[in-house]
Image (cartoon, rainbow, N blue to C red; front, side, top):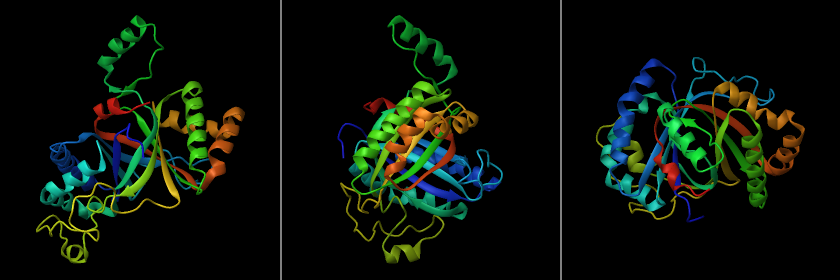
Length: 312
């Protein structure tokens, strides 16, 4: 794992799509973020709610770009960004009762999860998040420095695509090279693409995934009476992920687009543009054990200063 970038823990759940779910998220979510932000080593967060999938030329034709009303359950991904694994594990240890009470109160909307893998950032070309009032200054600064006009990532007004890719053993380097070439081509040539990031899973947090020891598992209630901090990997704070990484190796490709329509048409370039199709076929598809499967998300809450810590 590289030392140049922060690590990202993504808490992944699938939740019931009903009005009470949104009310709970807006009530509990900020409190969880405030608790998490109290710990050293925390760099920022991004909470995403799933709004659909990319049908990928009909392979997933039962899905659609806009499934806000019909997708049930729907995915909820919360990125928390950390200096290192120890900081994240220590946060869960030191705030176990508070996090248990807050997250436990959400369990009546959870259909699957939580599951909290760790990811290292292999490569990133994401711009800073800003509001519309920031745009003139950003553009003016680039003109003054005679730099290329930057892409603009507007706060809470972007579409995020997350692509799940499982890679053949021994093909990881080739996939990374091919994915970077594919995404670089798309950002340079496809309208509406804002930026991208490639993440590689390197393990899973047991406590972050609500995986206590057997006694704790049987005592879990909806937020009340937290069991002792413990998992099948013990009650110590870990410096490395206690649950080992997935095999085949999982990569997530995070893309940001101006809108769902831009994302839908933009990703399709990998199938219909001859030049890009050759790059993507040889650099990405030829190395897959499973995938790609692209989920479409909308930002709900975000604190994107963590992007300043990313090394491009």
